[in-house]
Picture 1 (tube, rainbow, N blue to C red):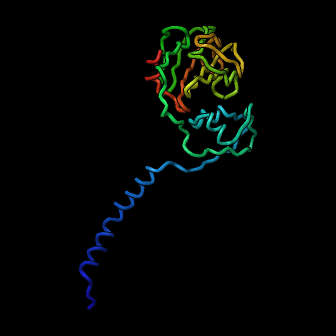
Picture 2 (cartoon, helix red, strand yellow):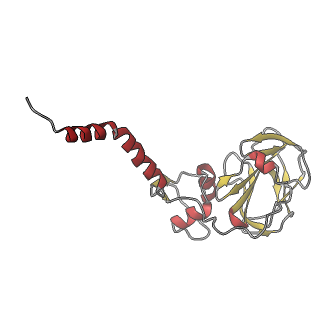
Picture 3 (spheres, one colour):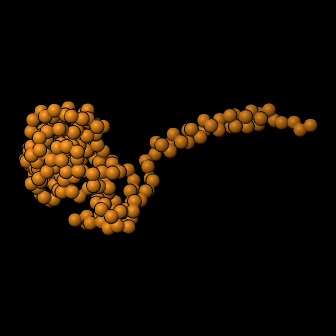
Length: 216
């Protein structure tokens, strides 16, 4: 009969019984490490940098940087774009002061619907829409399907505001706008009724509607 060394048997038993714990420990360690994964996307007809950023909840500036795109950031069908690294900006530098926002409709309009990260205002067609803060217009018009006439404005500190289903638009891509400036009129382009569908993003991530509503 084969005799086993008692200490060796105890060690083997410990290793076998600890396999699941070891796997969990290794997985926890991997989760702790910065993500190095690389994903790619093939550009489809009608895509833009901004529509891709919205659909994947990523920062358009980092998407531009990671793919070495140059102004006016034109992309083409079947072009391969790389999503590399972590799409979160360095937030170690604190904002010097709290940002005060201008209400997109200029006042305390009633919010008809809070839809996760959207505020939907049901108001009369033609009501003025205002920029919530100073910034640069990056989208102006029906560039992204599903949003109708859309205005998108890039603001300091990684913020991006979206104003969807507009009627008339009074700004163009590349325009610098001031806080509270009238940028469009409320409409129902690609919508069942006149509305303003509004969203604010920080570093590519939509701000929750409850928190968003408390900013104004």
